[in-house]
Length: 359
Image (cartoon, rainbow, N blue to C red):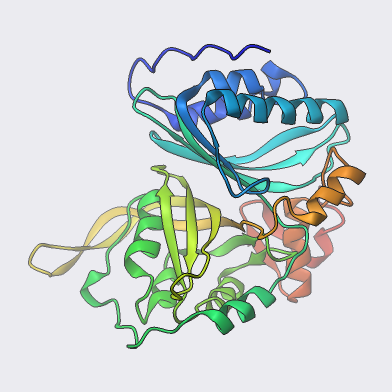
């Protein structure tokens, strides 16, 4: 069909968060699929760049090419009765993002993913990165491989010292942790200050989420690898949640950099925070305490499309997984059970005996 015309430029400041909600979380308008290739491309700039890193390493560039790419996806999804369920979406003016999973008429949970969306000054989509989870879960094998190939720095890291500060929003916290604190000798301890004690951390290289600060701290220690740098590329500007793109630098010249996308959901509460003055003196002032309550990390797969995803798509095209996945609450309860602990999250008390009763 013909390329849809572009929507008019935004009347005021761009609002990427509102655009994400309108384009991808609109089941009441678009019906079962919950998104429309025509609506999305109408909201894109002429020079839009779309990275579908579960499909290809090369971006799809331009409205016409993106329309062809999405129209074919829409045709396949409508034919098999699939829908896209938005799980979490973040606010943001210039960029936003959301986590999602595929589903069907039975409400099953299928392939999960995350999408990052950036808009230009006219409020039109200018860049997208989306990645779906790998179906083969290497788990801790990823850390062992990275540790074997990463090149440690020549000098030991220095402590954070006077560079420590108090982030004031989700996007500020992401920038602080990964652009300012990462690489310091006390990075893990400083990061732990901003993780809620009941945090749920989904690294989709693992079968189950990490639940609770102690569990997450162990995971971060495993991936605190000398020479490996987690390099943020584009960071959304949300207050309560943040989506951002990144790549992994192994410190080895010429080595390929794995790309990825992450989503951080935060909770802000009034409290007393530290504020460092221009004279270097630290004082206690009233402000917002920002804590991370949920994380999803997804790296790209080396092979595109990943062989298991292609096989699952042929067998169960609606879900693109070999069987329905656990709902998040069930996965949290399973993780608690495996680790012999009781957990409390934003979804309520989750104890080992809850996993059969929670939907």
